[in-house]
Length: 439
Image (cartoon, rainbow, N blue to C red; front, side, top):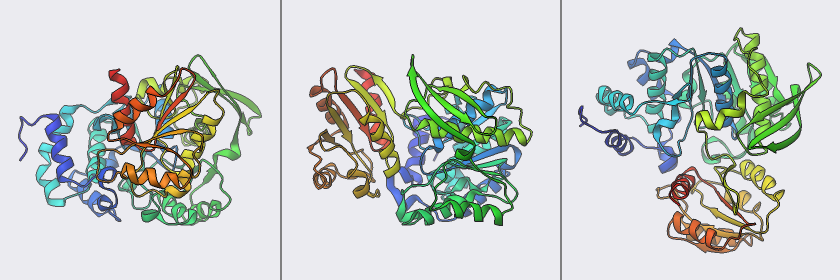
């Protein structure tokens, strides 16, 4: 039982033990309906009905888009909630207002107050987290909250909101065992966030699935906009720790230069998606016209502490931490890595069991040195099994008992002009960050 003296860590331990958590155990924690979330929120007074929202789904980039859009609203003077998942360091990262994490005290008090409700409904960890976030945003009277979908769209716990705008970044193969084995099936799930008469922005036009979004929008009488029809990126360069993207604004026939402290060549696609979202939101009456698009995103990493996206933490050797973990995400990451002026590549990787690793592993460079690790969670793919699978694609390296052992070996074998890349899982990166903060 919880009591007033329960600490923050004890409260988290209670939640982890009590409620199944998808990122740790996988499909067992996934609920293919909204029943628990609807019931939870009803008992909490339907807090999600008391504030405005933007809903963001997609296979890759939805966390980046959510953060970029939140920064724009903050810059315009709106009190802005931000809900994302999963976290890397601390559970509180999931729930922010104006870049500030929810307090430990709020989490302890929320769980203590609603313990009987939690134990009665027995929601998943994610369902409980969504309800907590909605309650917090309602109590704090945010002007708007940017809500990132956790998994899929149609049946995701966040899909009880009626947003100002829906955004779908892109579609790629991921979570096939839950969302479908084809892009069309996955897109249909993502399209489930499109609501009646609510506009939707699609980040990337993909010929195989474009019609799914268009058809859904027509059925819902929802205006639909494809961001890459309005904007095109033509050049990217990094200056003084800021990535500058030159973008053609097709409607206004002008070139924008947008800077962001989020690295990764793929961020240009996310910026284009957010620019179109801002256009639509302005047309709906949101006062975002004063936002300086050339500079507003330059404090995203600093303000929101949004880590793990092509995060360069050291130059010699070059050390990059990136949470890419599916086919398209890995492809974008490796494409950028291939353009770096480096001598050798040392790649520390670990994945979870439910990934389609055949499509992922075949993309990795055969000349790199590999360090196979696994996170300390039930869902983690055993490192020896990953090593064996990787050998089928001529990826060679040793398996290590701990993530720390793998990183230490990679650093030991690297020279000043080499690259050390850590990727494959949020949980791998959590330990990597903690390791590098200590050395």
